[in-house]
Image (cartoon, rainbow, N blue to C red; front, side):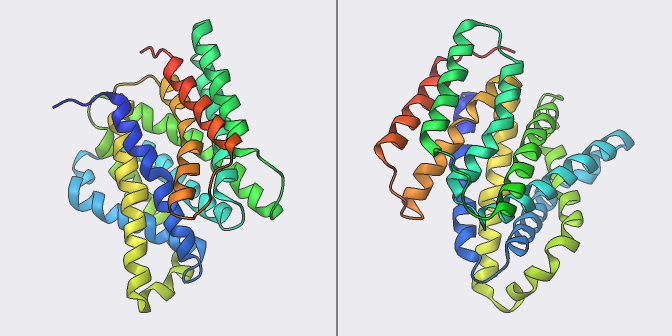
Length: 273
């Protein structure tokens, strides 16, 4: 049974911030870089057992996946360093900013321009980004945002390559697991003596780096990059809902209005390939 591409994106969006919201609760036991490391290593193990991506390895594939893996390692590490210092909604809003550029690059009609403006306006109303918190948190948040845009470029290219997207993702995640070892290894050591934290970290990895990234590949294979980039504007809305359910952060009326604008923008947009 073939599902519509937006359904895969919804699956990705649901888990995109669900895993990190639980990761925030782990920071009292394991440092942010340690949680990021466990997330990547557990995802890499799942992909390695499931896909055995080295079977399709070529010289060109290796070079591309090395860069993609470096992006994944740096993106996840900077994201966790950011949410350890800033509210999740603020990081979500900053993460969306470079994606606006990717969406704008694919704009072809007035209808899509209106859709983009509605989505951007919704994100602004929803998050009400304020320069508060630790300055270093914003450095990591903006670094994560730039890396997230690169992730979309690499992931979309892999998804459109003719069916090898998930194998490419698997190989990139294995590479990320190796690259993140010197960064998160020290902070991950306490998890060895804490089975509950270790199990929770593995759960975060599966819900944050396996389920959403696979859903991304399934969606990107059938969506233009600009359309997918615009749909990413749903992520701050997802962050608000996740914050309500997991972190008990009730949205204000303005935030609810922002969610409505974001959904309207995605609904109005007309995709093209």
